[in-house]
Image: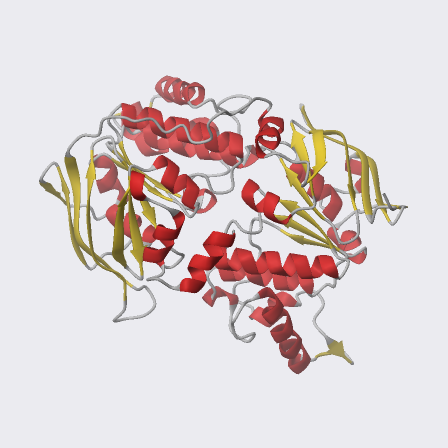
Amino acid sequence: MNQPLLEMKNITKNFPGVTALKEVGIQLQRGEILAIVGENGAGKSTLMKILSGSYPAESYNGDILIDGEKKQFNNPHDSETEGIAMIYQEISTHLDLSVAENIFLGCWPRKNGRILWGKMYEDSVKLLNIAGLDVNPRQTVRELSTSQQQLLCIAAALSRNPRILVLDEPTSALTEKESARLFEILHRLKNDGIASLLISHKLDEVFAISDRITVLRDGCKISTCTISEAKMETIVSDMVGREISEMYPKEEIPIGDYFFNIQNVTVPHPYNPGKNILRSVSFSLRKGEILGIAGLVGSGRSELVNAIFGNGPKSSGKIFLNNKLLDISTPRDAIRHGLALVTEDRKVDGFVGVLNVRENTTLASLGKISRRGRLIKNSEKKEADKWFKKLKVKAPDIETILDSLSGGNQQKVVLSKWLMSEPQILILDEPTRGIDVGAKYEIYRIMTNLVKKGISIIMISSELQELISMSDRILVLSDGVITGELNRDETTPELIMHYATAGKQEEQEIVKNV
């Protein structure tokens, strides 16, 4: 093998009481796509923060070599100077600056101290075309969707003319069409000799695009293999330290009668008067059923469940529980009637990061552990500890701050919060987004155990195989209306996409090829 473009040797990083990385080494060749996989907490992000200079050289042991020459990165600028560009999972943009200003932030083109606005806009258009983002470079970023902002981050990274591109869960906020576009970009960069480090929990993507795969577990490198040698079951086993014989532990459980009914829910567009995001949507839910909701970004999936939960406006519609008309205007009303909602973005509105596990677990059930308006500390600890153990949260104890936990364990705490409220109906909006394969399996087990107890689940997911494997029935939304209803035994990815796109052939072909 030729001298690697990048080599990280014997990297060891300690935090108080924890060894995050232990003598980890990787090599990256020119024009190679190396995937780094592992459970949340395996050390992937820590390794990349060392490479990016976010953790300075004196904070860890080990060496970084570029073209065989030892380098020390004490800040992100040092890393960028060596041609390393980072694309983080957590989107970082300046919302009130223009698209062009964000792309060239920190390196706006200048002459004689003056910004060359014309050149910046012109160069921005070229980069936007490469990234597959069709927007005006003069518009503010606040007007862009989450997926458009992710593509903007990719364009910004490419503006640095990188030798090494590091991508941390780059497709988590992208549609399948946008993801396919990103893979095209990576292949084109590969042909130009640019190397990529890809961190992803989506193993199908890893197998589709990577040249080699490195597995980390508990801060140690477990294995590295070429894609031709790699087997899905072996990679998963290396990641979790055990075999997972069935990825989707769905069981055949008797389903009860219809008891929850949504009639003619209409949701107005927040910024476009006269337009509706949802138009007269109706459906019913049975006891102990997992009802999947499919659809492309912008179809109205999240708006539907938020309207049901009182977490968003609806201009019309009725909600019935056991034939009784409910008045749900706020989430408090929904909780009182036995509804719970795990939102799409846990970091935004799923938990309070600066609070600990105990405080987050009891947030939705303070009435149960209070007397005359005063919190009963012993009751709070007892309840939080019960759910901490029941959902097997990996943390030192219930006093651990949420921001310090991995994504999968944060999601378990969010679930604990809602399960403590004893819901009849649990709504899950993208419940496994951004979490590893082992944590996904545990979330699926929790879902299966809940429906065994008669709790009903409404699940939104952009992962079609997850939706098909775990749902008893699937509703498909397109442009604010239900276009299809499919039973488990008749559902295929192609059929879902047919209803989701009103038969657009381009979208269907993308799904077949992913």
